[in-house]
Image (cartoon, rainbow, N blue to C red; front, side, top):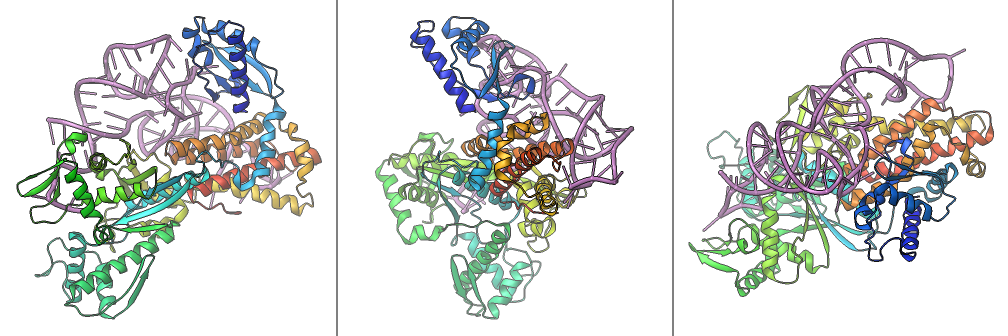
Length: 561
RNA sequence: GCGCCCAUAGCUCAACCGGAUAGAGCAACGGCCUUCUAAGCCGUAGGUUGCAGGUUCGAAUCCUGCUGGGCGCGCCA
């Protein structure tokens, strides 16, 4: 419908240019939006407002001229000029209702598109170091990142989900020492406990499994314990595998799967870190000071230069980061999105600066970043800070166990990434109307129930009869649902383009609301076959779109509640 | 002190990269179950979009300066 209007307008402008009414060189800016208010029709355009000045006409005058020049179309019932010069389009009821047929015809693919043309996109998210179970922040990253991937897949991109982690640095050393201490029977408050050791209960489990000689299998590795409490390297390898498995289980429970696990250590093993340093030195963007090797990132927009190689010879995390992103680029990803917590936002300019300094043709603003703000968890109005298992933070598993996967995913992805999030456990677990997840799922279950009813009454859905009578869907409530359904593809496209999964969540709430309203206002199971089937088809289409939308969020669509 | 993000109804949040009278839910108040799931619906009330300027036909949205909050400012990741 929207496309129809756009092409109608293009036709009108072309005709007017041809007649010399409008100057040939006039730039064309056509924006057609769905209206908020039914009184303004179904779609409106501001074209007359936007082009009035360059066209040298008054907005309303231009609007009138445009309308007169508009080609005929059966899809448009009425056109009005309103306000300062908006042109409002009223869709023919029959044409609008065709979206129902379209939804039923497309099924699971309704809302999907090929905008991405199969282009490769990589999304890196979660990327937690294997030092503990995933916490809520990782959970938000997982929910947003995975939802983004689903959106990109739905819009025709070839998506790679990637998880990057450091399996070698100081933090891992610290982890090994903590496990060793536990293996020796020490607790966090005993003498001899490593400074900054990991205090969580899970460290005890790691130590016990290590001593017992167990074998752990994670998504990207399998390690058997040696059991020798003095072999720190063996402990480290075992602990990393153990926590990788732990995180895998967290992710699995959350319904998130990765295509690639990328190890920071592999960058060293394959000489990519060395190669990156050399390239940067050759490029003349480095200098030595205080015994360290610096990169002049200030040449590329950073506020201070950064150390690449420490005085004692080791590299800072910054350098492997650059090497890693160079590797992404070399793997052919023109689009890379990094989903991270905003507490790491300082790496953005730094990594981009490092990539520019390499001078290998990487575009300036590459890669893209989606940064999410902090998550606070509350119960009974009080902030929850501790998890027994993890020690100092609330884990993803805690949330899934307590409120379920659907609510956890929905709550973590339903807010804009750049606003702080309060995760209210009481709300998420409440099986009541306060809970948006239930509100949406209930709408889905209601349609299913309606269909069961139709079966039981031996009045099963008649597809052909329904489609022949879509014009009978003429109440305001039905039209509202129809219009909402028609907008779904656009919402998916926008959410993907802007990297804003919360738009899908909001849409689903709106659609569920429209449906509930309609459900109460318009009885479906009426005696008249034509009417009943037309209404059933609207229910079916709603169910389909709810399902498609929920699927984009990784949330289930239950048949009954 | 510097940098990034945020500020919308009493509360939690929307508002589709500038559009018409800023929308939902919760909380409050009043209605709707012998009829398809009341986990729902209808209605009432609730706003100077933090403050002050600016840009233009038009601003919650863009710019500047404030105020308040979060995060960051390691040769940690």
